[in-house]
Image 1 (cartoon, rainbow, N blue to C red):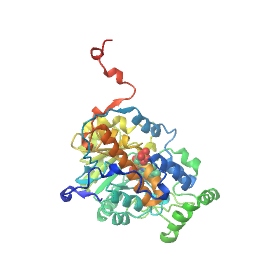
Image 2 (image 1 turned 135 degrees about the horizontal axis):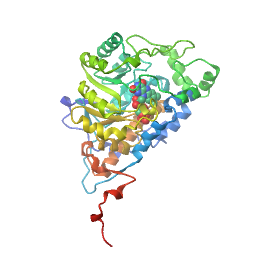
Image 3 (image 1 turned 180 degrees about the vertical axis):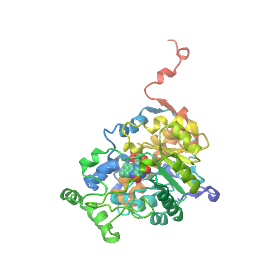
Length: 426
Ligand SMILES: Cc1cc2nc3c(=O)[nH]c(=O)nc-3n(C[C@H](O)[C@H](O)[C@H](O)COP(=O)(O)O)c2cc1C
């Protein structure tokens, strides 16, 4: 199913609970044994060379933000309602006038074309085929024009420098490619401190070394199926979308990537982008209710509450913890979305119940692409979709819009909610 503009929605929607019947039958040999999103991580570890797996899995410094992204979900318990006839279920959501089949999408991830052959296209096409949104990263190795041609409707994420000429040139290129939704990531004024990348031997560009060659040789399927195939058919990958012009190659002993002036970027640049960008504008990396308010004042259409999957400021608050205040602040005036730590349908449900319109999933879809290309990503989407469907039913809900705080409880403190007068006297 493809995403449809609300104006062109089919008169007969697909069977609302079509996903509920899913039991893994669509999965091919490589993913047949993978029963949850976390299973894809273990499988990808066996496919990807150590530096690359380390880059995808890793986070900043001591993993406090990474770990708390999961912990925040674990602290919430679900409160189901029963006997509500949930036979007609539809987990679809509308974002900026487009109807999507599920309330989750593929988050932007750099260098995806090293995880899987043509990785950005794999992610975008699998998402489009499943009727969910995908965002192509600005740190990607395939020209955005190619990705949009392969999967029209793909969103584009930019890391913008604080220099107006370079911003303008990139915006013109993105608009000319037919991108309708631009995501500007704002939580990276400087690079995060990812010691684990250094330990795993990862850098951008990758530096040729005996160790790197050895790491590649230890993963022959990846070496032949992804790296050598890419080099043979497309030449050395470069950062194609950091600017209007081509950036650094992915492998080089000397070239430095150009991060110049990212730390100059401020709200005046968002104002400038808003004046120029004709499409939907989303700001990714908001964690403060004050910044959410500023985004709204600057005419931003949507925000992604995110700590970059714990990869930037270690110790940054988990997005789920600040989501209720931000969603409350935004009201109906801005679309609020969230990412970070979503691994289960119940995580999706919890974020929606706290006010997110949709959520984004990063690492698991990257692993899925590494494990089995487009089929792998399709399988991962199916798994998460089936979980959301099942969870909606068991909560007594038929639509995402039915979800609210009444479905949630602090796992550690239910007793405090029971006033003394309400307690039975035995
Ligand atoms: C390998 C990798 C590369 C990423 N590259 C980008 C990027 O280029 N731009 C961006 O805005 N976010 C990037 N992110 C962050 C994701 O978009 C998203 O915020 C994060 O992965 C969500 O957390 P999760 O992985 O726990 O789902 C990257 C994340 C990963 C894992």
